[in-house]
Length: 353
Picture (cartoon, helix red, strand yellow):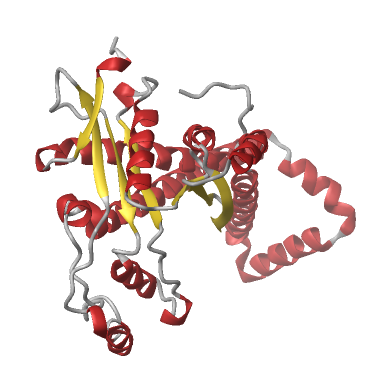
């Protein structure tokens, strides 16, 4: 058992890279698994599987009946085929035969066919959901590597060269607009107040238990603009980040070291540093599929700002922490905690470590 008093928070070092990426990617994978489970269990997925199974079974049964009619008519010539198809059409169109058709479809052979088709459709659906989620997860991870995790030291621990988005990522017209927008500061590096920390043991400082980062969004305005344009949004809709805002990112604790208070220590370190550096607000966004993490943010003082539904199965939770909140604002936030916790499906009395 690890003693909480033995946990220390220190700045990230290049030697931590592999452990940090492993911790983060394990977290991404766990979120992906939850999304897959929710998608598979969702009523629309279940109803879709049943509807497809019934449709495919009926089509297959119709094909079997048709082939049977053709085979039975082979000894009676062309006239027999025409007569059989005519009889089949009359049987399908005759209202008085509905009861007989229902009885036909309730026979054990048809039920067995329907059960087999349901199994096939279910397996195909589950595989498709899982495969698509894997592709989306890989795409998200690659985006993280391209953005900040590719070079953590450069992104979080060095000043940022001010430059417009590159020609490789956005349209030439947008590049020119961005250049005009940044002309005055294009050659002046921006002071970067971002930081990246890892949690470790005092006796084993090389062992990474978890990590967290503070992103100076104003310093990375150019990167945010590039990302905004790559998503197909016009520059006119881009909001310049405030120099008083910082973003909490990359909070993750290795599954082997959870429920030891590591996340709380990491968040307190980030909060203290943000205050010291002059930030007035810390913002964050996370998926709605992490209720335990959201509960931790709420109890730490974050208030839900908005919910953004990306798709039927994916919702983002945006929140803010006012670093200079008054006693009255803190009291009001505490009163809202129960409502926020119920919103993510957790009891206000349930303890989250």
